[in-house]
Length: 288
Image (cartoon, rainbow, N blue to C red; front, top):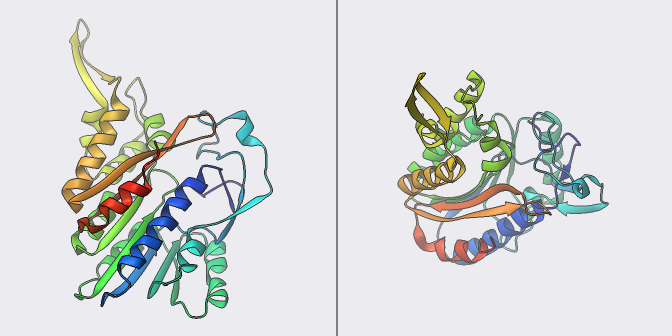
């Protein structure tokens, strides 16, 4: 799925997410200012450098059930995307990896080299999970540290990717967990799920634990029957956060991001194997 059916546009709620990212990166680089580390920034679903702010975020299948009528009115306001926010830091990272599957967006990311000639920019045209896992394998040296911004377009971030970052012991990650936009809405009340949905959720959560969190079983006149739990959404969120705590050790959030009328969209979550940045992350992700 693309960031938008309209190339280079984002919803108004993206300003909260991008503002939180920028604030954390600024604080991270301040803490690391006099440290002897080679610092890497990874943007796993990078998109483009500059985006037009709009009033709607179409979902993968074209439905707008979580969105407001007023959110469908175009607005001529532009915001810096995550690549520009990371590149514009007073103290830049030593290495930037911008990953996107769309060759057109990758070409736009390559143009950032001309705007930031002092920065080492590596635009990567590839599947985000494949690329991030490959990058994590290079973090064997003692002096490597990094921040990964994991902002998938749907439930496309694999648990294996998060585990690879956690295993390095050297990454802080900021995750967009699309619980309401792309996960809970696909969990059918009648429990009949498409094979593709099951496979996608297995990859997202790393195992079949999401099913037990979402569905229960009753034994009645017609035998054993599955049903969607009324608190499935909350159970899934707790499951995901618990897995992050087990993998990384330190977690801040989840912080809910809503649309302009209060509808739930996704959660921002910070995780790291080093607890030093947790207080900063909790302060930045303080809205609810």
